[in-house]
Image (cartoon, rainbow, N blue to C red; front, top):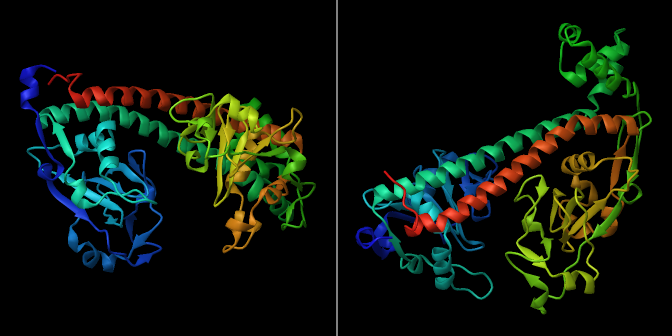
Length: 459
């Protein structure tokens, strides 16, 4: 950066850049199941605000938000548990929970979008940690946050830098949203076939009404009318008919309610090799690395961050640790399931990796009666309250419970047909996750150079 350009930058404490700092620590809202979304620290992740899990009543909003009303474009920062997660508000009306601070830059000095990226940068994150306090949970007081030293260029240059980074973020977000749609499509097919049993029930209803059961199942599977079925190319029509034939035309009782005739529930360990991960002794830090290492070591907090396919891990194990402590290596395209404390997170491995003891993996034999895609979707739709009461499920679920989990199984022909139907969706999701990884790497490489002025963005 040239001397002339550098002289245009301002270096000031954070409070001097701000038009507003809104902090609701010390207050607890009355929460409801619907209403105004409550932005809590746990849903601010990876630069985004995830779907809210808590709300406050509309009638309480004005009273609760007396300290300040968030505006679209404001930046939210988590102050503890975790510290330093950042996101930007859209035009949705929201309320702020504890452990969240909202920042609004002075319009003539600071672009809020630029601020969002700057707060995620390594130098400012390091300042946050340096000014944090707390022996058990690390957090930062507002008085300390105000003292952060920020060095920024003129606001016009900030906006140009932000535009470059937003373009990359938009591409990443588009891929994520497409993958969510693709997964929802796969889950909808699975639910129709193997949870709601729509084709079977359609056959039963058609028989009772003196109609063609096969035709009814074809309508249930395809969502098409009779007229649309008649217009299908013969090859596609015949394939659909062949699929419909694989569904039975009656239901029967089971230990878990009525299921299609001829189908059965089997324990997970009869269908797969169920393994449990392991954690080497934490008091021996030489077994662990961050950033890179021999083996990706997946914890519950890593699951769901990437998407359907487990690609990332926040920590790694050395090869010596894996060998010395006999940590099971999980093969590629193996289904992972979290079963301790946080129960029911599911992912497919993307390459070999290892996990901690809170995660089970289901290794399928070469002649397995089910596929990875089938098992992934089954575990995603599974009612985990079956494994224990609501109050005790976190303690009740153990490795024995997981090995005995009931999995519904039908004919191999039907599961093969289902797998062929959803496999292209999973392949597209994997390709888009790979593209997300590449775009994130590009953004993360550009971020410090753009923020420091090493790379200039022309007007």
